[in-house]
Length: 557
Image (cartoon, rainbow, N blue to C red; front, side, top):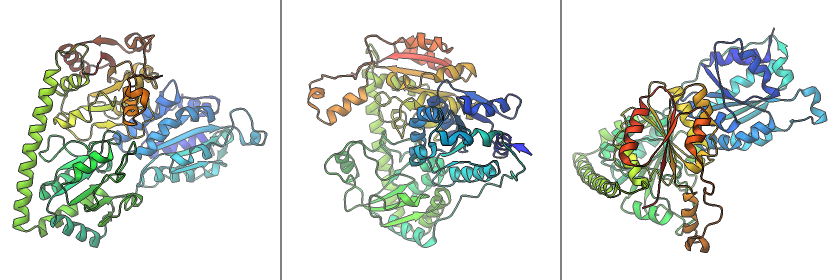
């Protein structure tokens, strides 16, 4: 006979869980009380639910294992909903739990009680309120399997106090993890290989799931066989790096808007789409269709929902991306004729020349802004690009500073695993995601590039970084405005915005002192205002054993 909360903890050990992220309230106290004497876990306290979920999100993305986050009942769950939405858009495997009032009081609708499963169901793969201690092991097994099975994503368990404290004799066996490397159907693979081999000018559109499936090398082999340039999604949805940024066939991300995307793709006759949601647009433009009608689409994905979702495909291939792309490369190697291989090699040489010319132009532009005071976003990004360690992890939530993937454009990211960017756009995520990434990868330097507006949504996370001494380098890009909103207002051709008159889009008067704010939360901080000082400060901080915030004032060129 054991309590529900101890059943939960014993099973989490079986799933390899080391950290529990959370912010407790009364209905969560049985967990915190049990953890007081349980050395198997580290409880990572956040001062609000938003940081708790985002830190867990970063940890789960880095480890590719379910992270566990415990939230307070309804009001606390509400605080975390924006980050749960991010996790849903990312497909992050999270087990989210929250306490619930004792079921013996439920009919009275007591304080804090509510139908939490109804609230979270649209943004989780599965949500359940466990009604009996005896059902808890099955609920945990279902939740964990749902979270990690493609398409991965967050799941939710509501745990009433009487279930947490009740006792039962149960089978708490943790089953072995399923092998998820499901190979695609041979006939679909054959058709895909034939279409790609016969293409006159193929290209590849790649999404985050290639990185998450550990299939980057397999995709690179396909690209090299085809001599096809590889494009990531636009900044608005480009979450992970799925192709080496210093590869000769790497090219800049897709543009934001449909007309520019259409122009960019016009030269190609076949597109291989790998692990990407096709397409995720942001603001409506005419023509509404960003992909030219004559382009044939070959789409590989482990999520059947993504195939034929928005555009009819020449062939859709369902299966795990790692074996799927590996088998595609093997098929192409066999069927490509000598002449097709020669043309592929010529395409690769031409793309490499174009890539080098684009990089040199971008570097010259950055050099031309180096003396600007305050620094420009381009100057900041170029300065950092020159000092990034090869094993760095970069977390971005500063969309008007990070310049549409500048690190990738100039080939500064020397690894593909360590890039994390927004996909859901509930702000406050980046600062806290970086903390979770560092917990997952304690031996890798972690750099978080955070806008001032974004930072203020989740600034409490700095306290967690200080309390547990998690050495993240936070570079706070301060332009004292919601610049992305000003840009979007002009894209929408709103009259006041086009006349440079904005209401509610400036973060000034009073000016926020981020250095003092960070220090008040226990994180050492400093302010720099020139490229040399920035380079020195960040290089030193990335080698430090404590967190640090570096504020940089920015202006548009």
